Image 1: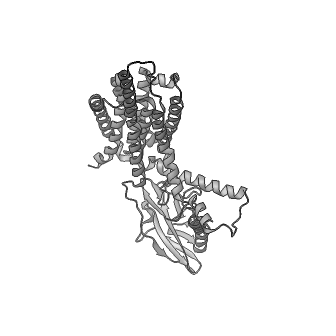
Image 2: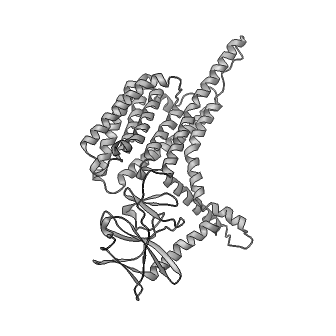
Amino acid sequence: MALAYKLIPLFLAWAGAVMVLGRGFPGRRPMVAVAGSAGYAGGLAATFLLVRFLPGDLPFGIIKDAVGAGIILMWGVSVAAVYRSTGRDVPLPWGERFAHTRLGAGICALATGILVGAICACRFTGADASVPVFLLLVLAAVVLACAVLAAERFFFSSLTMYPSGMTVALVAFLLLSSSSILRLDLFSPLTMKVMKFAHDFVHQFFESMLIPDHFFFNSFTWDFIGFFFGKQVGFWGALIIWFVPVLLVALAVNLVRLPAVAHIRQGAQRRKMLAAAIRERRSRLVVPALAAVIFAAAVYQSRFPSVEYWDPKPVSVTASPSGEIFIPKKGEIDLEDEKLHKYLFKQGGREARFFVLMAPSGQWTVDLDACAICKPDGYGQAEGAVLCYYCRTLIPLDTVGKPGGCNPVPVPFTAKDDGIHIDGLTLINRWGETVQATTRIKETGK
């Protein structure tokens, strides 16, 4: 049952990609089936090997970069489609001509199969990555591809596919499948990058223009500036980056000129040609509309993942007369279970929230339950990473404890045989220097 639950979103994406390829290459369905299935098997096998022999999250980073390259390709194709639609009798570019060849169909199906298979393999790492699982996944993918291609010619015969629409649809299905896996999700990290870019841009603008915190900057102005420091700008910026290519493809369809009919004397024939061209245009709009729905599903899946995060309630701790906080490794809480354990320290009317974590590599780390960029909403742990609740950015466990970006702010500590020793004053000051200042910026914009 758990295996089926993992496969449902991935195989839905695979079926959709095969349907798009079948529509895009109607005369190459056997090649699409063979090349796509071979690519799927190769992507599965290669990912299983990468996860086994490469350390940490490096294999996942490779796959994320490959899917990200698909987004860049989608942007290029959509912009080219708009450019080509603005002129009449523009010759087909070499890329579009290549896509209509047998070799182009095979390469497109092979590349899609490799990426979908690699994404699917990321669901089955560790003990799940076995030969029976590999064979089962390949067999299921081949059967599903053949079934979709057999049914596609009957159920989707009126669906018009074209190179730019096919590219957008394939990337949409790839993003839908990758967003179901936390370590492959692209939307949440993109929101963080956009938010950080806006933050750095506004900060550098103020610095370069020598704009101080003057009294004539009223609260309305600061509220407007504060918007660029919040997560809303990251969310909407990421939406723009994802959805604009879909809108460009739809715009390209609408910009295509209707056929010239002035030379046709019979009015009925002219109306017939124009009506056929308008129907063709409307049918082409189905693809970007479908891609927009898939993108929306991927965004929703990224924002609300079906994952339960390990997020323990902070335990109150006190310091000794010398100001040292001591947390034993064994006792009511086992610090060596490779889970983050949160604590709350109060002193002199101030408080600091932090966690202790032993990474899978055996390294200890003590960090604030917040970063130096986002509001201090804290972190949860799942699937070999911790997640920032504010911006939904994933931080691999082997990078927790390193400063910078959305990583939790590290705190100096000493690990001994009996437990973890932390200086209470250093902890309180670190919280005040980073988290409280960040909270003021996010809430007031200054």
